Every structure is written in C-alpha cells, then in structure tokens.
Length: 116
Image (cartoon, rainbow, N blue to C red; front, side, top):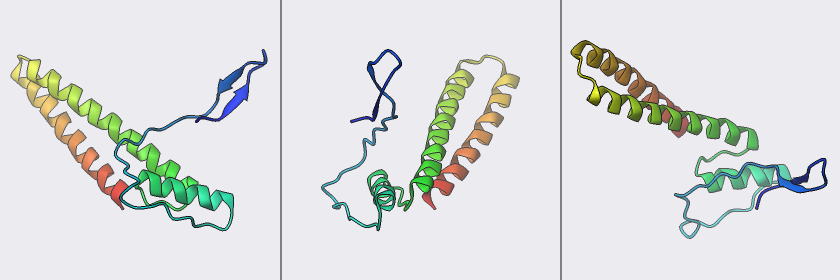
C-alpha cells in the first residue's frame, strides 16, 4: 500500500514510491521489533526487509541509491556489450572494450561498497 494525498481537484492520488524486493523471503528469518520510537522501528524494518542491514532510514536511502546506481551501470554494461558485438571496426571494438573494463571496475567497486 502506498501513501496517498489529495490533489487540488479533490481526488486521491498515490504520493509515495513503492519498491519491490523480489529476493526477500520472510519465512527464513522473522522480523525483529527493535527501536525506541517509530522512526527507529521503521528504519530497522527497512534494513531487515531489504537485507542491507541498515539501522536508520537515512542509511537505507543511501544504500538504495547506490543499488539503483549499480543497476544503471549494469544496464549500461549490457548495452555496450551488445553494441561491441555488433561493431565491425576493430578500433571501435577496442575502444568499447576499454569502456567495458572501466564499467566493470566501477560495478565491482560499487558492489563492494554496498556489501560493507
């Protein structure tokens, strides 16, 4: 369920962003209720559900942004890889291969940063 607000015409519209976490299995580990206020409880739930291990909403937002950036880099990598396979000129293939290696190192760095 997403947060809802009213627009100037009086209609109800969804105002929040919903994130689907497909790889989360709640039957493996139950959620722990920890926190001295609703903000701490919410941040703790976000960390448990997302499997990031974050404790606050701010930490979750940073990690979620990093994950979105990682997905974008992976898409760029896939597109460039397909483009390189279709390219006929060897010099352009070499240039694209260099870009692929740079993207691959950036992806690896970001993955390591997210895991920490």
